[in-house]
Image 1 (cartoon, rainbow, N blue to C red):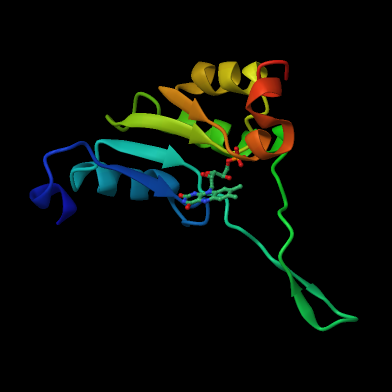
Image 2: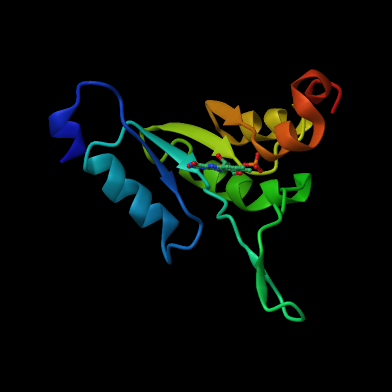
Length: 124
Ligand SMILES: Cc1cc2nc3c(=O)[nH]c(=O)nc-3n(C[C@H](O)[C@H](O)[C@H](O)COP(=O)(O)O)c2cc1C
């Protein structure tokens, strides 16, 4: 549907909760997806049970969270002909290198930018 409407490449950001990531990835690629982004990391608010309020603090990612996307990038690489992008847990160069080794074409970061700022990111 989207692919028949636009002429630019379309990438789909997946969540990690599909029962069969591989099957889903193949279906998306056959449906026209040019790229897949692994994975979205949902914002997860908390409750303050004493104040009975929603806690809107940010729960930023850590480097050990790369393991799940790392696994699935390696599984999909060479099997599903799409561009692969990695997101979740990138704190610095180490995680980028690991993602590229697993088969990602590109890696991106969000939490680390909030934690360290742009100027300190390259030191991680
Ligand atoms: C403050 C904040 C806002 C975000 N907003 C979006 C968004 O609008 N759309 C989206 O696809 N992902 C959004 N994300 C998710 C990030 O793009 C990224 O996929 C996720 O945070 C995992 O990467 P990280 O471990 O580097 O944070 C957001 C993340 C943060 C921290």
